[in-house]
Image (cartoon, rainbow, N blue to C red; front, side, top):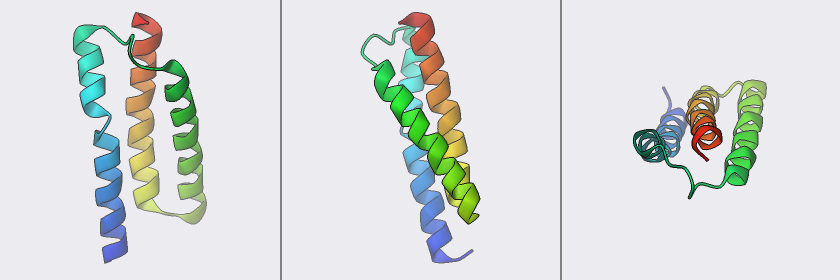
Length: 84
C-alpha cells in the first residue's frame, strides 16, 4: 500500500466515524429534533456522488469511506424520519 492510499484510508475512516457519536446519541435518546433533515439529504446526495466518482476512478479509499458513510447517514436520516 502506498502512502497516498494510506492517507486516503485514514481520512476516510475519520470522516466516516465522525457521524458515529450522533447516530449513537439519536438511537439512545430517540430524539433527532436538533438534526436538520435538509442537511442530511444534501450530505447523503453528495456522498452518493462521491461513491460514483470513486467507482469511476477506481479509488478504494473513496469507495469504502463513502459506502460506510452512506450507511451511517442513511440510518441517521431514518431515525430523523421516525423520531422527528
